[in-house]
Length: 211
Length: 211
DNA sequence: TTATGTGAAAGGATTCACAGCC
DNA sequence: GGCTGTGAATCCTTTCACATAA
Image (cartoon, rainbow over all chains, first blue to last red; front, top):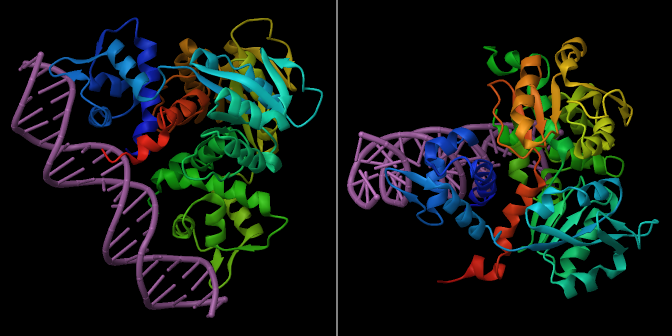
């Protein structure tokens, strides 16, 4: 299964959720319009997983949502741990969309600071030395990393060693994980830096210069 | 110029910055190891923009950093505005890596709330009605969107109309921008949802099942 | 008639492999 | 000898276009 396809499915789901109570049926043309993708791509993507549409009609929005949730494994709750309860970590714990999407942080960890023993957004903050035990006991497979760059790889190694199989990395480093462990980086600075390329001087000159 | 290439350059830059004061020369093999990319890809990517290496040696780290900064338009400061000074917006304004990377928020905007007139992380919060004037006066080309999904497209339209050419969108919507305007989405929930696909049941079964 | 699902074709991106230079 | 820069080859992704079904 191509990974690019898997990465688009959450976008389909997000778009469908937003229209669920206004639209019953949608076709690949209309969904493509909202997502800025071609209808063919949407049909091809979905066809990897089954036949969810009706010819001459389109896709039932409610049904397609259910199917996508099932395919993505979102028809259950996922427990997460977060490591690094600095300003960024606290903001992530307070970010309401995770719990609303079925991702529940059950514990947060920090190396020391006055944070240990407190609660942030209802999540208890423990010392990192407790990480392996908690991950094992609670059967946790997702970790969020929000520690300084200098500590990120070590923390990721610790998470992997404890049994975590998916890592959402907010630290601005190119981390290494073994095969079988998934990693997604969140770096808004990198995102911004990939746009300035098109902004430097007049973008029209950059893009359409005949020289 | 392939967009995937442009999107990798900030990753090269980030990795090089981290080793700058420990390493003078790096070759494509070593840089590939740290970034989990093939040496050929790194050489090919760089070759789109010029010849920065020395045969038999590799790349001078300091020089390559300078070249990448120049290519990406990062050899200057970029002014930004942020729209949506809720909890997420305030966290973004407080995120220290933007200013440290040359991205300076000069103003933030909100629709009403008690925020207007205050400062967040040193950034004045103004009413959204002032947005066009500020963007024009300050010559701002980058906007950050952290409003609720229901208002995101309208805010993005307003930013584009005001003259912004690049948008970092934290709202969980598939926004539309006209040609010539760049858009990057930051959605950690989408990132997490694209990992659960590999977690559901035993990932080994998913990936290596012979049936 | 309309829109899906899908092989086939086209288009892009990555990797290979080696000439050329340090 | 070692590593870059780069055409050629391979691999992967997207789009086309149409048979098929509602």
